[in-house]
Image 1 (tube, rainbow, N blue to C red):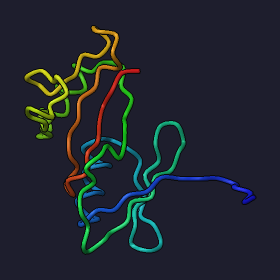
Image 2: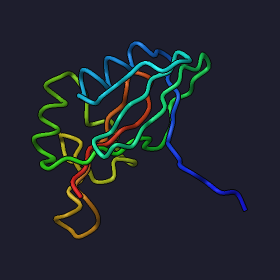
Image 3: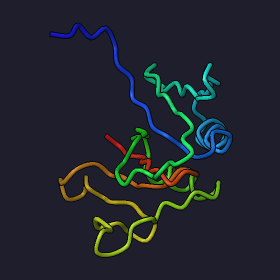
Length: 130
């Protein structure tokens, strides 16, 4: 059996500068340049995320990063105010989102309140209340 010492998630982007600005400036996460032209994002939990440039990048069709917030409405307001669209799904794939792109799962007991948006590379990211 392999002895695993640690693990970290990673994903690709097609423009590392746009990713740096998006994750660092617009989302306010701690972002550092890596040694290989990559980015190292430090999440509030201390977990590191490896973001690497890929010339033939294809956006992930699934959520690559879930960001936990205290207030879904405030988070969506702040994202929308910074130009980030949170209503990215439409029927039949809209998961019951409201006009702002929020699923109110806690009201029905069917999961968290959550809203999805895309990074500049087209990857899906979410904000949610747990």
